[in-house]
Length: 306
Image (cartoon, rainbow, N blue to C red):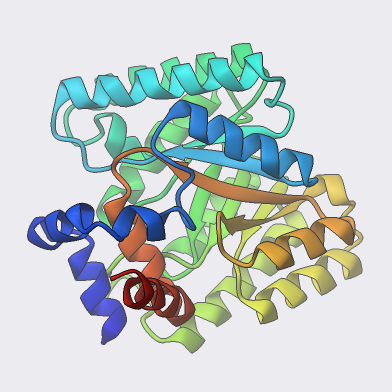
């Protein structure tokens, strides 16, 4: 019930205004968001890379309905990639892009052009791009754009959400095309007709897809904070003789940082998903919905700073 309430709140503009303007919010959000500027994103990347981790940066924003806003997101990514290159960080950092932020709902051709501008900037900087997944209504469009882009830029990565019932078939398609695939559980409010809704079902789906990606996937990216799933991933990677450079674990900025470093110290490649930018509200609410520990941290911070 609490998860449904928080996911609904992530798209409620009235709640968003309250949270964005509360004096405590910006202090609390620093745990999960690396600031609002390119400079803050680069600084966070430097710290993580120095600690032996890799990074995927997300300029926050989604569901853009304005051409100027979509163009602004593209410019932000190009600026970020140039700054990462200038600081010598692109060997350890890529970017993640939500297609809805760059015009997916406005015009397919424009969205594709915007995606190519970001990918071209990433190529010049010597790094890669992964297309994020969003709610199920955008899955086909995102995979279609990915397929078009990968004809020229096969290193472009995909994301699969384990809770969607369609994901087993999508994983097989991506395995056949030798795509880089980030596997996550899924963080959007979805109807039961298209998504598993119980924790047990989602976890089982995640394990099934993780097995397939580690068995035959070109480059699996296992995005989870669940200790059980991490342990299963470690065991499978060992049993299937995956060398460390052929897969990675991924975790969110500010969540389980000690575990991130433990995995890296054990020889695994670990990538931290680092969001930044002014549009942090929807992202924050989904993070609170995913784990009760995140919400407890947020509420404790509110209690101690008000």
